[in-house]
Image 1: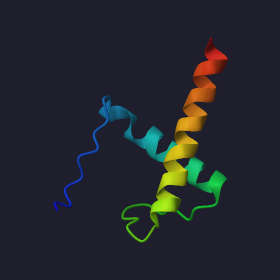
Image 2: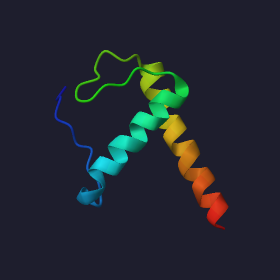
Image 3: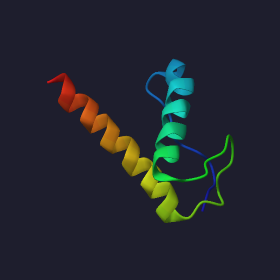
Length: 65
């Protein structure tokens, strides 16, 4: 299995904003996320951060309708 990171942003200039968004989502669900490598997170913790991010994106979209 390769450990190469294939996550790419469609708008590379948005990297810092997305990192900030991820840190805020992690804080909201109580996950201790740090800058850089976070391989010590459990799948549940990582999934809760991603789920919180999706939840907030959906809420933002629904408010814009």
